[in-house]
Image (spheres, one colour):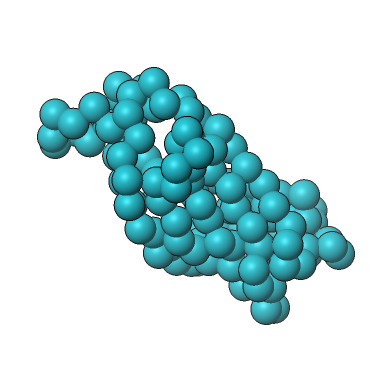
Length: 126
């Protein structure tokens, strides 16, 4: 890991809720929890990307997410990830999803920074 990754480092992503981002199994025209989880993981990945060294990769190691309020199709959702802990290869980010100034989701994402060779071995590729 390159120097500088510490608590307080932030990244964000913005998404406009599209019909294909709604629950596949229910006719609700709202941002699905599944998609929110994906976008929260992506925002947390944006936190670590500038700090990965050559030959290093980050992998998801855990996600805890609350989906508190709906965001409708057409709403812009801003997903922010803030690093709250770096302990060895473990990076923990607080994530928050806001639509129209209202918090619609929050939680934490855990990521591990690993040598790519170790990851390939774990996947049976090397």
